[in-house]
Image 1 (cartoon, one colour):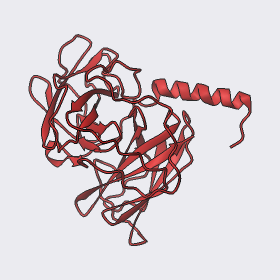
Image 2 (cartoon, helix red, strand yellow; image 1 turned 180 degrees about the horizontal axis):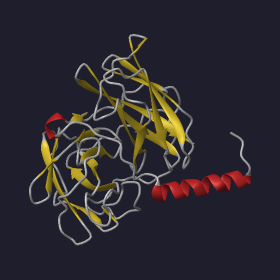
Image 3 (cartoon, helix red, strand yellow; image 1 turned 90 degrees about the horizontal axis):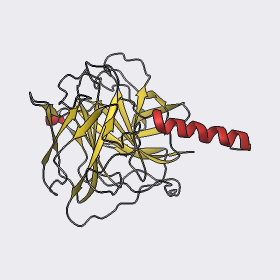
Length: 308
């Protein structure tokens, strides 16, 4: 794509503005603590069609709990007086483990009033620094405001834990928040290279195709198509009030983004084409996780998308 110096400066300004504000989006939802959509130690297994581009961002392999980064992309544990706190700085490898955390409000007290978003009051994500091992679950909250997220087996390495929520009272009532902290899973960590950007991937016999040319900091439509044995799928079931949930993480720092669905819902007759509103603030590779349901089973497809 040809560009003038003026266009280039404008695009960089848009990208910078997007980094500060565009990523506190909330779409996702996946089962409860007991019906988590997890991919323990998931390998990067999508089809590749182009060489991978190096990331321009720094690694997220930092010290657990030291997460005071720029707000808006999910990489901070604090925003507008709300804080994600946890005493868990490490979790065991190779077995199920519970991550316990609390969200405190501007008054420093644990928050217990949360609005339901896509039928859930809290959406929780775990992702390893190389963007493998994606887990998306809905934790349970005790009366004192302590949340417990039951995670499937974790592989050694640095993990980032995201909490996505909306306060149901106070000055920030109705505002979407995404906060995160890092934890370490001890053991010998082996980094898995991110697969090259690709237009499609396969999961559980389904072929998922993504179409859309995205530019950093600019809103674009994104279309996802689902097929089985070469035939368009038209029986996608409702999943948390929509047909698919799409989450994205940026290569290098694991910045978080939700992509909002715009497809009209019509019972359990979704597909084959699903439309999303996409606005990713930073150029580079993004790892997309698409979750959809058929026949009562939840499927999670992953592929790499290049954003210019």
